[in-house]
Length: 442
Image (tube, rainbow, N blue to C red; front, side, top):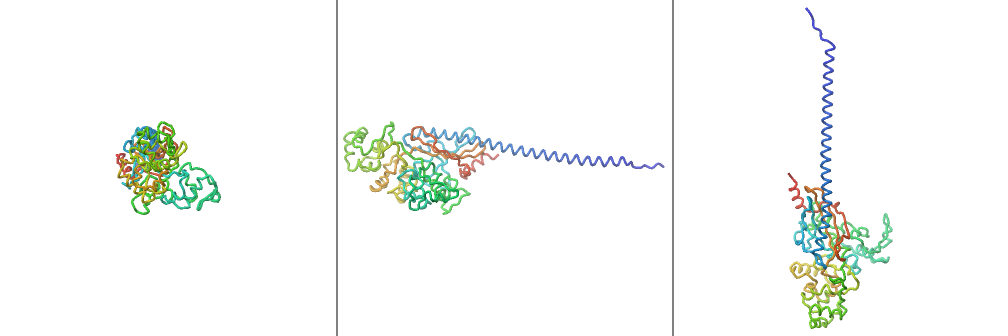
């Protein structure tokens, strides 16, 4: 019988084939892993590219919003008029395939948890550069301290004399790193961060992202459901009015009896002009508001000449507060008003919105003495407006936020300040976020 003997060569060949198969499987597994890795990287890069494109589109929407606001102010904010918020678009305005919002303020606090949209009147704020604004006035602002108020005056004034509780070069020289006290007007309200005594609590209060409402990541310290802001909400360095009439000629000084009588005769008639100008104290009035109270004119008559008269010399009137738009917190700081009368003014203004197109209505709330004190600080006109623009690119991506200040005191609106606020995070409120998440979710 023949015996079959297994060939050693055949056994080795089988083992080699098995090893090769294992190597091939490992190589295949490695190739699959590499493929999946690069596929995932490409997907991530695609998403990142998509987000970058959305951000670029949102940036362009910001620029479009600036041009849009310029157009709104050109058409609606002539001769110091504040544009009515319902007359222009301010919420989810479409620009190409992006949208923008103008983040505003609701001084009536009608809906404390809902964000407000619209332009913000810089004339409704207290001007830090107004030389008539004192430390005592600044102290009345929410969260303000006497030391910080005095330091603001020392930072702004031209001398190096230290005010009581104030700060000059010696204080800033002890800091690390040291710097000088400016002793010159503020260039922006954010310059307050450099002033001795400034804290984020004083500057921002509860409203850390500066949008007017309490957001989920902000603390409602007194649990009143409202964003109680710091002083940045109530101050400006931009408000100013041209001391000219609508035709560009200088306004008529109240103290100039001859010119004033001529103006009144043209507006009414000679007999009525004589009645007005011969009333006691008319030509000695320290402000248009006091002039109105002394003149015995009707509110309708005064509205015809309010922008034609002045109590101030020079081409520019610096830093008066628009009583038609200012918050109670700002009005409280005005001499002759105080906290109680400030709220009364706001309440009257809200209840009689159709009669507050000039400053005449203020005499319905303030006494004669209070009018004399407050008059030089008040106006019914505004020429500077801020637009806090937030934008989203396609599919609700690429969030951007930029704040502009527009000035039209010299004619056509121009941008005088621009600040990127994107680092403050989402500022469009919870409802807007939910709305856009619903629109972008498949």
